[in-house]
Image 1 (cartoon, rainbow, N blue to C red):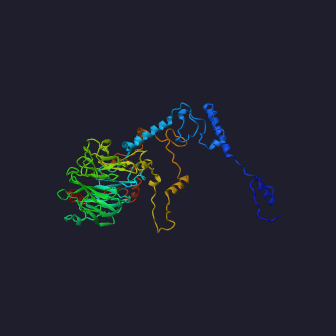
Image 2 (image 1 turned 90 degrees about the vertical axis):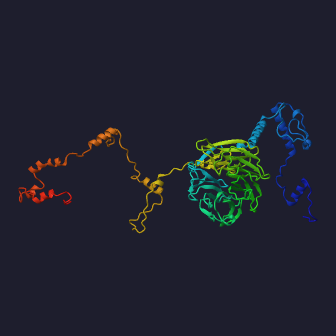
Image 3 (image 1 turned 180 degrees about the vertical axis):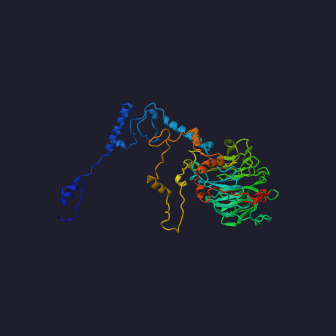
Amino acid sequence: LPRDGPLQVQSGQSSDGDIASVMGFSGFGKKARTFDLDAIFEQTRRTAIERSQRVLGKDTRSFCDSSSDSNSDSEIGPPLPLQHQPDEEDEELVGPPLPPGYTGSTAHSDEDEEDEEEDQNEDDPVKKIPDTHEITLQHGTKTVSALGLDPSGARLVSGGYDFDVRFWDFAGMDQTLQAFRTLQPCECHQIKSLQYSITGDVILVISANAQAKVLDRDGFNVMECIKGDQYIVDMANTKVQHLHPGHLQARPDLKLMFIYRTVRTWDVTKEKQHKAVFKPRSFQGKKVIPICCTYSRDGRLVAAGCQDGSIQIWDRNMSVHTKYHCRQAHIPGSDTSSIMFSYDGVTLASRGGDDTLKIWDMRNFKKPLNVANGLTNYFSMTDCCFSPDDKLLVTGTSVKKDEGNGKLVFFDRTTFERVYQIDVTNASVVRCLWHPKLNQIMVGTGNGLVKVYYDPVKSYRGAKLCLAKTKRKEKHTEMLAQDYIITPHALPMFREARQRSTKKQLEKDRLDPKKSHKPEPPVSGPGRGGRVAAHGGTLSSFIVKNIALDKTDDSNPREAILRHAQAAAEDPYWVAPAYTQTQPEPVFAEESDEDEDADKEPEWKKRKI
């Protein structure tokens, strides 16, 4: 071949032929199939138009035939009626055109109505109260004065006037609703408060004694505060003297508690020394006793409700002067049983011993925003709490014995109207918790009950877990297990083989025909199969049978012996034949004078045989 220069390949079929002739073959094989997309789109468009005409029964003949106009903004399908012509700014319609005279879709209106109802339910906080179902946990017979729920909502701990602390595990309980552990951490002292840490690994226990305790999740002791000198005047130089209900801080290493006339923070790792001391003071500068305390949600503020009716709030890092102070929050001398910060940190709620519930704005702490009266309170630990969405405020009421039912009352946070209430039981409602994750309400009452309110749809886990489990039936193999005697020094021939499992032993016995033989029941009625039927099964036949078998002899024993005297004299068998040769005639001993004198002696001189 001539090599004058590189080959020049021209476009089209001539280039393919030249290359094929140069390289020595006829062609490159089958060519790829080409598609005219414009023609396919046009055919699809015409088919859609024909189907629309067939369905609507309308003869539509005006449509664009040229493919050059396919890139324009023309609509697909027949033209719409005048009342349905879209504006230029509207988006293109998808699907077949609507028939003439069509006004609207009822499906969209129904959906809109449902959406409006859902929005109304979401706006109404009463609809979110989980009170359709309830379970009752039996703590004891005395007042449940403390309740604590861990942050995850898996375990509930309750304490009362009976000195007991009970641990409830929702995931481990069945329908019997039994606590998995009961203990008395403070011996014979009433439990005043129980609080989980923010991580849920430790529990603060406040009782009526002068020392607070910290337990782990299983009830084992982690820390116990040291007891101080009760005669030292300066509270900063002594330890603990008397405790009121306390609270755990947001951080897991600190806890807050009340001490006699002081509020103190402690480090769990240093049980012999407190971290900070807050000293509440009255208007005259005198010492006052704090009754309840709490931390703010962010852990920066420490609030205390005092016995003189004041509410005092400190900065956590500044323990000398108060940051907020309301001196006449409640009536002096009435125990402020609970104070609680809202989730947004703007509002504070206080439950007083003067039968009131007040809500305060932290930005204007001089006077309360709203006040609710007529809420009877007989306990120094009656709770109040906010709902998870911060729209409701909840508290309990107290009643005397056989004078009505204790109630759980719900107030709207903005209007402070009583929007809902629940009749709990015929005793006072002391403690109440509304867990934000579970959306369940826990209530401690004055008759030893812990009630859990929940809704199967709105609530999660918690009480729903234990109700789904049935009580496990106890097997007889677990109760009737044979005792195993351990003899380590016995000979091999006398050594008893250890039973590894009672279940396996029963399976072996089941295969043995003798051990697994079922005893035949007694024959009732006439005898059959070679077996004689038992006597009558009535009481009369049983008595007659026993009378016939009675062979007891109630006669005189002397007469019974003399009855055989004649036969013994005529035909002697036992004694007389032995003396027939030596003493054929019986000789009896004669009575002597000594025997007569012995008979005449007094009883106390006679010889005792």
